[in-house]
Image 1 (cartoon, helix red, strand yellow):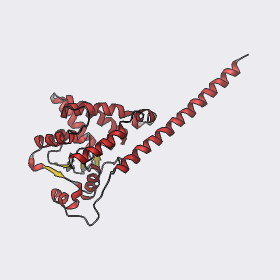
Image 2: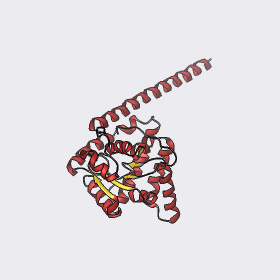
Image 3: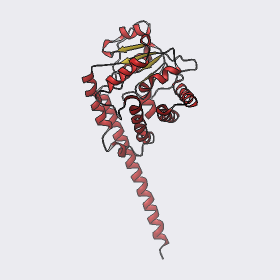
Length: 266
């Protein structure tokens, strides 16, 4: 939440960083920082898989379905191809579901480094619970029913649950998910390619990781609780307007049918 979808860069754009931090660890801030430092678009998989162009939404749903069950050579190659297609033209990827598929993305981009944003466990869980509370409200799927792209949210959520169960033995993000995720990264990523980073540290440590100069501009800060709440409110307003439109259409159709039936009466 807090940013919009990004378009891929020109052909030849080099993919350099797998942003492997769990959601609510500063991923949106790192997204903006990498866009500045690497001079190219970052693929936020949460935003792109739910609110991006429909081809990307469909590709991510297929990736999320295939990843937990890709056992054969052909299935793994298909997964590689899907990831390469959806990430082509970007300098980095960010957030979930991509963060949960770090080993699979490393297979496609073996030269990329892995930068995992992290934060204190207790503060992370407070932030995560807040967002889960917004997204888990019982009425949200009903309110956004007529919004075209949000109709995929139910499918997305089910497939993300499958990934969570496959990777962490949890159906959803829970209090110890951050620890499990970071332990998993330490197991599957070579130490020389894995970097943990707190966005509160600013430019210097990130620039050392990337081996780039420190830019002469303020470090970005993005995706506060307020931004998350505003995005939630925007979806609610858009959903209510879509319901109003559909009710107007239904009323008009009902009135036309009623008028036609009256005219047909003797």
